[in-house]
Structure formats: C-alpha cells, structure tokens
Image 1 (cartoon, rainbow, N blue to C red):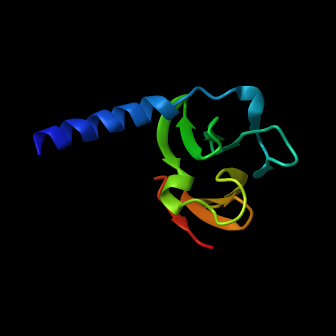
Image 2 (cartoon, rainbow, N blue to C red):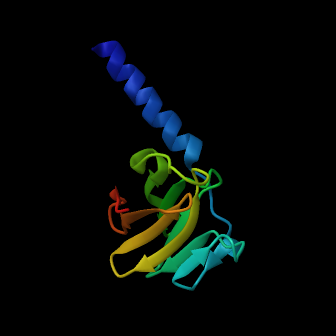
Length: 121
C-alpha cells in the first residue's frame, strides 16, 4: 500500500508538472469561443480567468492572476472520440461551463469553477 501511495503521488506530481505551462497572452481571445479550424487562438479570457488549451490539445487549464486554478485532460476523462483525432477542436464559454468539441462529434462540458468534466454526447 505504501508503495502504491508513493507511485500515486509521483504520478500526480509528474502529471501536474508535465502539463502545466505558461500561456502566451497573444493567443488569448476576448471572444466567447475559439474554433481551432478558424483561428490560432488557444484561450478565452472571461471574468479575469483565462481558460487555455495546452500544447497537447487535450488539456484545458484555468489561470487566475497567472496562477493555475485547475487543469483537466478532457480526452482522458471523456475517452478518445470514435471519429477524428483525440484532440480539442472547439471551446465555447457559457455562463457556468465550457462547451468543448473533441474529435469530430464528441461533446463535453467543463465546469468553469472546478474543472469537473463530463461527456454529453
């Protein structure tokens, strides 16, 4: 059990440092959506929080005052899409959630406060 706990902590630390990056301000949009087919933008700024799609195109991070608030690998949580690449193609901001499209037809919702993610279709 002790060895499992050490391995779990190591995995957590590696995951946190492996995905975390500083976002590039020039890639942040003030619009409510980003469609990777139409723009090079990678993040949305709303209510002084930046929701940024990391380089792996699977992870969304929320930054408040340049500090990581939460981070979630949407593809890991929801599973690989049946059609298309396992990466985020679209992110839209809604009142209390991010609407995410991965692959060709998989849809997820991410709670903007906690990062809790669920597959919705």
